Image (tube, rainbow, N blue to C red; front, side):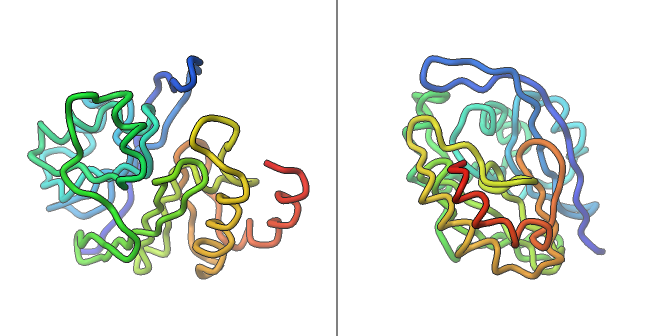
Length: 209
């Protein structure tokens, strides 16, 4: 059985530094008819569980700890008996949403998940947050970038725990050297490809965001 990728779009609020913004998030369900990984369980656990549709959930993977990427994770994990995975450098963000709970697994560079015969490799890509990661599926020709890389540039770095030079280094060193036909499945908005973005790094550096 060949693995495939499903997108669930959910809506809610992003909250940080005392501000609150309405957002739409991409939740990614990756696998086959037996098992899946859920990437960034955001806002609407019922919609995510509907997409999972009774399949075994290998893990609920959080690309970073901002509330709009984790606020349905605990409910989805509880309903599917799945572990929640987060990079430990984002525990301070996780604690803003779940002050009395901990993730089940801590992500690290070089780690990976096996789902539906595909390996999903963890790439540590700090900058949007210290513990931001991407998941790269070579066999799927896809990378799940969270809020690290979007169509047209890097994720935002104007708030707490973020850093623009760091996100630029992450994108340059960890993402733009992936095959150019790799599809970038982002945390918000439309997909892009590595090939569409690789020539624009200097522009992003010059504009500063």
